[in-house]
Image (cartoon, rainbow, N blue to C red):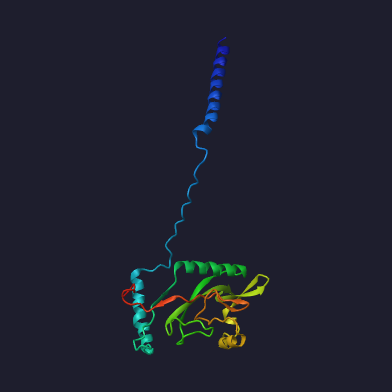
Length: 237
């Protein structure tokens, strides 16, 4: 008799437990919000690049250039047309969106040509003492030293600059700058005159939107803003 009583109590307790859980499940949708706001993705922290240098080191190499390079450049240049002293440029800049767009464009063209961009190579250069280039583009900084940027790809374990050849039907191929027609022979200007096609002077006034010829696309970026900075604009004077 006692055993039946215990079983009865156990059955009642079990029934109450099931009933409570059932009511909880039914009330949950009413008590909990049906929509949860998506959590914002946290921006991945970027570690300090290994190539960052100290401000004091930057000041030192800036002064070294002033004393060992800029002064020599100014000593070899004739005065300007107005008779004032020629001042060597000390820096050039691009806005950050231009740089981002350039990198994205270079990587896009390289991918379509089936190659990988290894480095961005900065070449030092000097603008000609002329008012315009062979393609009649204005020389904005006559005689000023400058730089231009050339992407490289890996060829036999060596990084080498390249441009894009359009093969037609949407196909592209990466070709080495050093093999560009007429480059080594110094006949690029002659080629421009004979073909009357779009021509960009290597290392002087090239930008990413200008094709060298109908089937070739340069990836060299120049056209930065070059400055011989007055004292108020220089960061290190």
